[in-house]
Amino acid sequence: MENVVDIVSALAEPIVETHHFELVDVEFVHEGKSWYLRLYIDKPGGITIDECALVSDELSEKLDDIDPDPIPQAYFLEVSSPGAERPLKKEADYERAVDHYVHVSLYQKMNGEKAFEGTLTAVNADELGLKINLKGRMKNLVIPRKNVAKARLAIKF
Image (cartoon, rainbow, N blue to C red; front, side):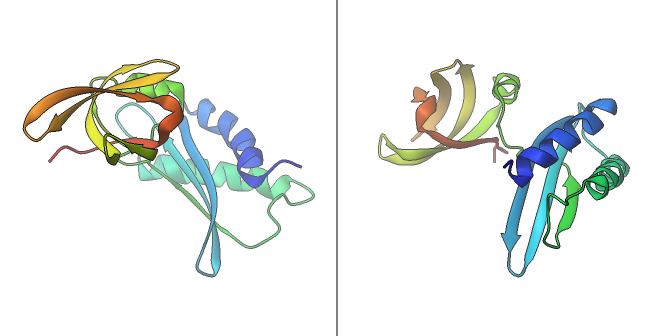
């Protein structure tokens, strides 16, 4: 049986594409006593509240039409922008992030650290290239992709 994220992604993708938006991520999470179905959408120049509401309304109709209901428990549907620190999930996200400042979290320590921030300089199937500031000196770092737990755009302070 498909899980909720897969079902919702399949329903949302055509809706989002019709409006020339990008489906960045879908998550179905339990927080406190409530369940949340969250969709993150974007487009060049950013997404508006009205555009989020449009996708929310259209997706809600599609979800209501499915029988049996793929989400039997009560939940809150949230559609929003991924924000300035959007996650890098798809290969296209990584490629767009080249020359941008990013935060990369690792599964295991590398050079004594489990997270790095710097400018993404290169991306391929096996590695990420990152230019980091290490104690005032710029250093090029190569991170194996299999060691990357999460990556996102970051704001440089």
